[in-house]
Image (cartoon, rainbow, N blue to C red; front, side, top):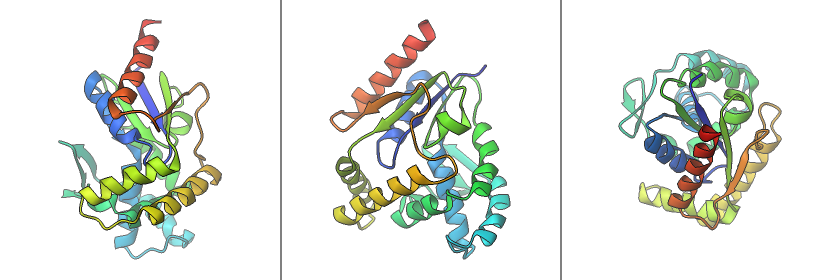
Length: 222
């Protein structure tokens, strides 16, 4: 069985950065499941589909299943186009959260995510990696932080990428997305059974990575 480390958590909890560094340290593959939903959101936006038009979004489910998605050299590619910065815009993130509530879309993307499981191993980050996508993951981590700290992290990330941002708007958006993710009927955001909860509010990235690697070492040695 190919080992999987599932790292879940709310928006801007630091799970993407931590997951990438853990994957790099272990020589594992990496899956940014949130990027896949953002790519689906970008596709729906370009197709002119409304986030609340469920019949129209049903067609997106079939389209999403065939998306040409690649993570290469730190870049995210959609059908040969580098879109890593594009999908980090707040408009795309909010749309991704809105369309992720539709079960048909989640089911269409499930197999795409599971296909990233390849030797020697995989580190997958998202909101339902340990609960739905990889329920048999050897290590499940739920990464979290206060909403205020997460808003500050997102603000810094957006400013560095040249996007306009407001701390107060980001904080409200995060709270709204947290509520939407936690209360949706399909795969609500919550710690997986047996998950180790890691609050990074007062932690550096290096400390969070070290803790996940220590947990993984314990798992493999036991």
